[in-house]
Amino acid sequence: MKIHFFGIAKEIVGSSELDYSALEFPKTVAGLKVQLLEQYPKLQELSSLAVALNKKYATEEMELSQNDEIAIIPPVSGG
Image 1 (tube, rainbow, N blue to C red):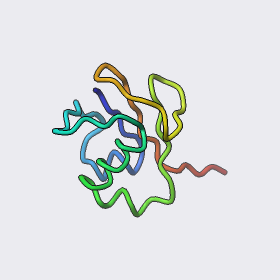
Image 2 (image 1 turned 120 degrees about the vertical axis):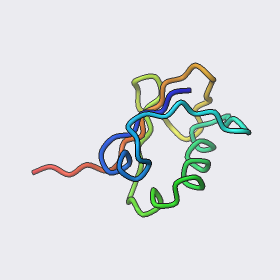
Image 3 (image 1 turned 180 degrees about the vertical axis):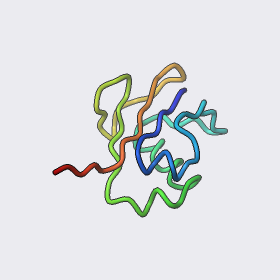
């Protein structure tokens, strides 16, 4: 599974893209977020993290597969 990181999330992880292969593959978006927060604790400092699954915003209960493309989107401000 490819995970793309944007904004401050990219800085925290140290890369704009990861080829993610966890020992225990997450079944849902919520499970993936738990694993990422454990692996990169600084992500917990963000007020929110949106997840896109195959180019569409995802809900926590959406199921994942090995071929999915994930984007981690931190909070954005505009003006």
